[in-house]
Length: 228
Image 1 (cartoon, rainbow, N blue to C red):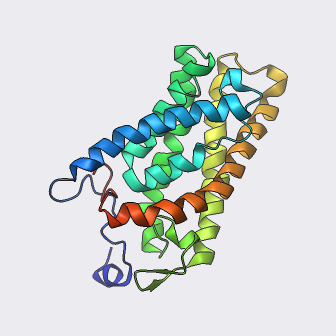
Image 2 (image 1 turned 180 degrees about the vertical axis):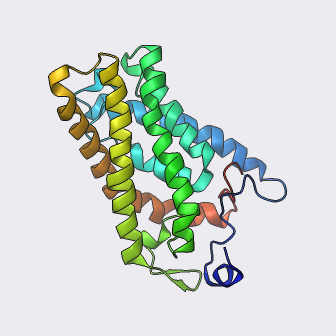
């Protein structure tokens, strides 16, 4: 990132580096663990409360999805790891899936979020899109006029369509390959997965960003890089 861009954007310290310079606040490590527990519980509830296909870990309103988005934007690798562990345990083992299918299909809640973090901290940050998605709900970020139209465009295109489709393809594709999806029901399950994640993402992500992100940042609890 050029020196001019560093002066222009108030999020230049949020990068794709490994870690922040200097020690991270001890509270941050506690939050890494807490969010994993939260995602496990929410993954389970997303499936058993609103998942008619819950025996295979699929929900028609996967309301944990936006939590994983926000946690990954905050905490990088640890947020994506929470999504993976939450899917293995909460949306897999706890709803009756065997261990191996749970481990395999949970990649659907790991890979897309790692890609998202890399895009938001890399290319999109340089294009003037806030890597914490505050420009979805804020008109100004620390004196910088937010590009709300661009923020929503990339939010829908990348998270709602491209990465959501990747998640559905990985999750349903792996289950199909393992014989957990009936041969004539592949697209029905795929669409259910895609729509369930899309609805939850569009409805809940802006609420979480509006209510929590500025507070978490104010206490210095946002990762500067992938790990701290």
